[in-house]
Length: 257
Image 1 (spheres, helix red, strand yellow):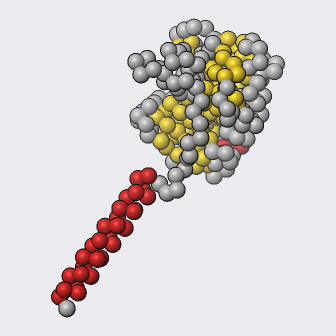
Image 2 (image 1 turned 180 degrees about the horizontal axis):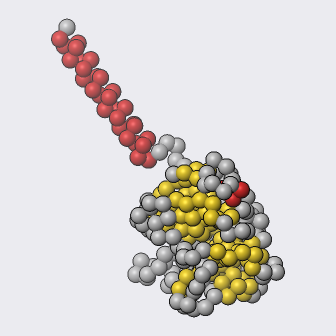
Image 3 (image 1 turned 30 degrees about the vertical axis):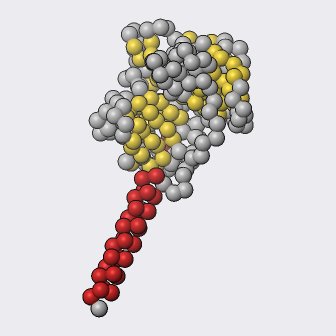
C-alpha cells in the first residue's frame, strides 16, 4: 500500500513538473508565436560601426517598405530608403533622416521639414537650430508641426494644410517631444515632460490631459478606433489611456488612465 502511494506521489510530482514547464514556456515564449520571420531587407551595419535603425513604414498596398536602413555595410547615414516588398530591392534613397510619412506616401517629414516624396521639394522648411516633430492626418490633407529650440516662441504647435501651405491653427505654450493625430482627424495628442495634452487640432482648444508620467513622453499612438492612446516614456514604460467618447467634441475630458 505504501509503495503504491509513493508511486502516485512521484507520478503527481512528475506531472506537476511537466505542467509547470509547459506553463513557463507558454508565458515566457508565447504559444503560438505572434510573428513569423519572412525576409531580411537591407544590408545591416558592421558591428564596429555606430548606428541603428529606428524608422519603418509600409505603403498603402503593402508593396513597398520605407526605412532608415543602410544600403551598404559601412553606411550609417540613416537616410530614408524605399524598398520593394517582398523581394527587398532598393527603389530609392533620399538624403534625409525620416520622421514620418503620410498615409498616401505623397509626403515625408524630416529634421529639415516636410517634402513631397516624388520630387523631394520642401513644402515646409525648418532652420538648423530648430527641433521639429510631425504627424500627418489620416487623410494626408494636414500635417501637425511642433517646434522647439532657440528662438522659438509661442505657439509651439501648428496645423498646416499641405496642398495650399496655409496655416489652419496654432496653439501651445511649450515644446513637445512627441505628437500624434487621432484616426478621425480631429484630436491632436502632444507629449511634454511628464504629461500628455489632447487638443482639438482645428480650434486649439485643450480637451484633455494625462499627468504623472514622471519621465519624458517620447512616443504617442492612437488605436485604430481612436478609443485608446498609448504613451511611451524614455525609461521604456508604456501607459494606456481610454476615451469614453470623442474628446475633440467634448469640453470635459473623457480620457482616463
